[in-house]
Image (cartoon, rainbow, N blue to C red; front, side, top):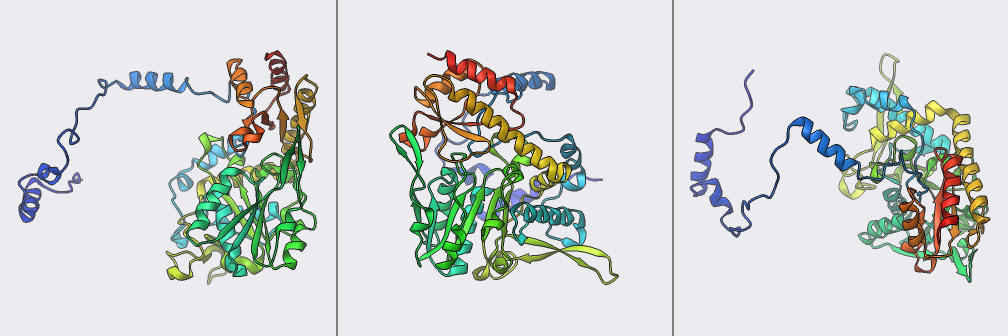
Length: 451
């Protein structure tokens, strides 16, 4: 077996002569000398053992969620990842696969995607799901563009309680197609209280393609969704529901039951750790009549000429498969490996297991809220029911509270003042099934000790 050499010395000399230069360096002579091949200030090389020790020392500077009690959520959630997930997704058949471009040789991958789609439909109560989108944030943008294509309208409403980062991605997605995005005020501060504002449906008129709401919303609260879809349908608009953590669907009604036309959810947190925010896997589902405008790709089940069950790409409405002007999105792949992890999670837990996890999150969040609410100077905002995140008004700016907690070995909640200046004294605290009672009691004790 011979080693691969891209070009020989003679071939390089022939190419340089053909373009009229003496050396490869001549190709870069327009670059200022001080910028071309500057001396690098790097340390001497290390042995493998020395490099391992150095990297381990660097990693110890991170805040390890296995050693620090953590109450941070706000769109990224820490759930227990069963050991079976790592064992299965590490198999070479899954780990080395990129994407099912060739269905005839990717039956295993296609089947796992089909199972993912089936689970997404069960969770959301929708008719059809795609193979996944990049994440929930890009899913929001795709949903808005899809709704505009379906209704032939150019105006989108989004509640201000949708994750602010999702709304930023929405603005990016809609800026190119010249879609107007209007933010609807769903909650407001009234003195020391957070209260419900106007009905979201009041802002809908005949120019609106869709209304995007998050359930539970960014503040952890449940939006009033009963009757919302019917109100939208009367004006020809579509209800888009976003779910930041699919675990909450273990105790909440599927969006399809209250009339959602498009549902977007984040599936990452049920298949792996936060991983500094990624990689993610967005769930995307809709009603059957909307399927022709769904982005991405859909895997379907069929039989071959011998009657054996098989799987194929049923729809793939993107520019690499059809004429660009007919493409429904520019989604270039599915997050198949992350989606597989999530698929294994839901299959492993089953319906009752998922409900048990969701109930643990709910019970622990409410226990934490009860204990914190009893502290002098702290108030839990209870403007609406909540599942696993609660809003706490602090006696000092939330950023100061978090710094004090970190000095005491606790990762606090999310400082809501980062996105809403009027909420600088509010913390968004999250509890999952991994949060222990001892950690909650420790948090309460340290909050009471902060001057």
